[in-house]
Amino acid sequence: MKYLITGAAGFIGMHTAKRLLEQGEEVVGLDNLNDYYDPALKEYRLAQLSPYPNFRFVKMDLADRAGMAELFRTEQFSHVIHLAAQAGVRYSLENPFAYVDSNLVGTMTVLEGCRHNPVQHLIYASSSSVYGMNAKVPFSETDQVDNPVSLYAATKKANELMAHCYSKLYKIPTTGLRFFTVYGPAGRPDMAPWLFTEAILKGEPIKVFNHGKMQRDFTYIDDIVEGIIRIQQQPPQGEIPYDLFNIGNNQPVQLSRFIEAIESTCGKKAEKVLLPMQPGDVERTYADMGRLEEKVGYKPKMEIEDGIGRFVRWFKAFKNND
Figure 1: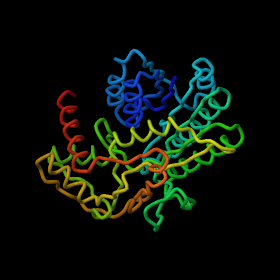
Figure 2: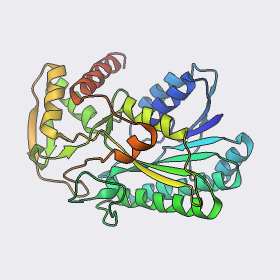
Figure 3: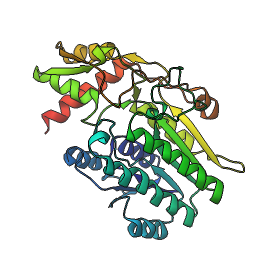
C-alpha cells in the first residue's frame, strides 16, 4: 500500500506517518511548511521521519491544483490521510482567506485527486469545533451542526459536506474524523499545553480564558493515531461509502485540572491571568465515542496527568536541544 499523508510536518501528520512507516508501509508526506508557527518545529518533525527508507517528502501547497493533480497521477496512492489544514480558531478571525485557501480549496484538490485516481480510502480531518455551542452532551455524530462559532469550524463542516458529495457522486470511500483537542510530544506551539508549559517554566503569567471553567476532551496523540490506523483498514461500504466519527477521549477535563497537571510536572505554580471567553471559543467539548468503539474497538487509554507528564518531559528536552 502507498499512503499520501497531507500535513506530514504537522503534529498529527508526523505521528501518523511514523506509525505507518514502522509498520513497513510506503508513505509520501506532503506539507507546505508555512510560517503559521515556527517552521523549525516542522523541520524537527520531518527529521523524525527522514531516517525511514520508505518515506519521501514533497513540499507543495494543497491549493496548487496542477501540482496536486500531477502528484496523484504519478504516485497512484492506494490510501490518502488528509490532515493538512489551516488550524486555529482565533487565527481565523484575523486571517480568513488562509482558511479558504487551505481548508476549502486544499480539500477540493485532494477530493479531485481521489476522483481521478483509484484511491481505496480517503480519511480526512474534521474537528470537534463543528459542534459549536451545542448544549447537549456528549456530542454525537447525529447532532445538528449548523451553528459554527468560527470560520475554522465552518470550513470543517464544509469539508464533511464536500466529502459526502464525492462519496455519493463518484463512490469514493471517505471517512471524516472529528478530532477533540489533541495533545502530546511535538504538539503545536499555539495550543494550551505548549503555551502554558513554556510560560510556567519561565515564570511568566498564563492567560486563563473563561476563568478556568472551560472543559476540553483532551486526547493524547497515541490514542488518536491508534484510531486512525484502525479506521483506515475499514473503508465504508454501501451505496454512499461515507462515514463520520468522533475521535476523542470521552472524558472532559476542567481547564484548572489541566493546569494543575502541568504545574505538577514542571514543579512550579502558574501565575494566572483570569479572562472572559474569547470570540470563537466554546465552553465545553465532550465526545460520544460509541460509534467508533463499535466500528473498530477504539478505546483511548491515556489519563491527562500521564499524558501531560510525557508532553512536559518532551518539551524540556526539545528546548534544551534548541
